[in-house]
Structures are given as C-alpha cells and as structure tokens.
Length: 119
Image (tube, rainbow, N blue to C red; front, side, top):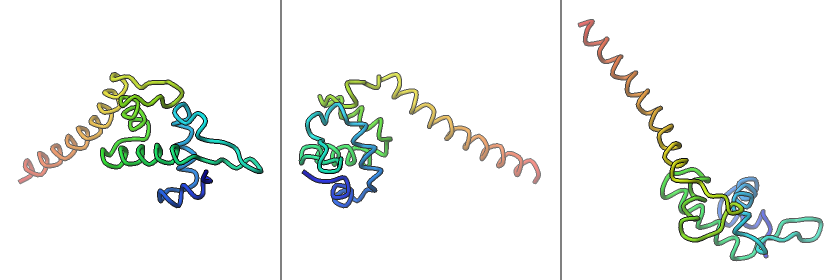
C-alpha cells in the first residue's frame, strides 16, 4: 500500500491531483483504497495502476479527466460509482470546445477581410 504522496511522486502529479483521480475512480477502487494510521489514505498497487492508466488515456488523447474516466468505462471498468457519461454528453463537450475554435477563426477571418478592404 502506498500513500497519496508516494503515488504523486511516482506518477509525477501533485497530491491534490492524485486525490482528485481517486475521487473520480471511487467506484472502481472499492477495497483498493484504505485508511491507514491517522487517517492517511493508502492505495493498493491495483489502484495505482488504474490511476496510471487514467493518466495515460488523458495525456495520449488530450482529453479531460472525466472523458478519460468515461473511456475507461467503455473498457469494462466500473468507475465513478457506476455513473456513466453518455455519448451525448461527450459529443456536447466536444461541440463546446469546437465552438470556441470556430469563434476564433471567425474573428481572424473578419480581421483579414477588414485589412483587405482597407487596401
């Protein structure tokens, strides 16, 4: 069993970042996280490995933690207390990101149009 600090150091994350991932994965970590002396959280090797996989998915795909948790759900893990992010919610999140990209491009196109019209 490893402490949050040990896991944070191993995964190159902050203690708060590990704590957040433990909360997001609580359904999949049943029995894998325990309280030690003085209430210190202790994580099993399996818990550390699941957090490592979550980070790999998040970093490789450039997605949010919640989306990474959802992707792990698709692989059969019971994460986040059994709560599943639906395909619709994932699509909506992607559309919100794309909206800002479109707004940015619109501003650039408007600026280019103004510059051209001033010539």
